[in-house]
Length: 130
Image (cartoon, rainbow, N blue to C red):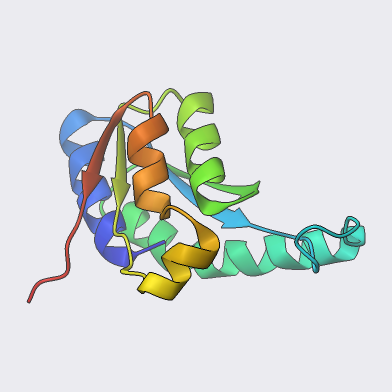
């Protein structure tokens, strides 16, 4: 998770007396269109994702905000949308990364575009300060 998005989300959750749900997507297939990976690959990715989320969880804890961390399998956009629906999110906060023309050509729409198009809740984008 982008720590900037977590800071903003923590502030919003504190003011709204809401729970902050942090989402981390994992894609456990070694070959995208190949056979499923062994279970140990998924578990290793899940463990690594939880470690990566520790700083975000600590920010929420320091701010006195209730937070939960969800590790979801799938694409980033798919995971975000699935978790937002499951937790009935009022707001999705994204700090999207810019992708080059080649990445857009080969991988399709960005996570931000997909989430914006398909989200059932409001979506807030954070931009880097220039």
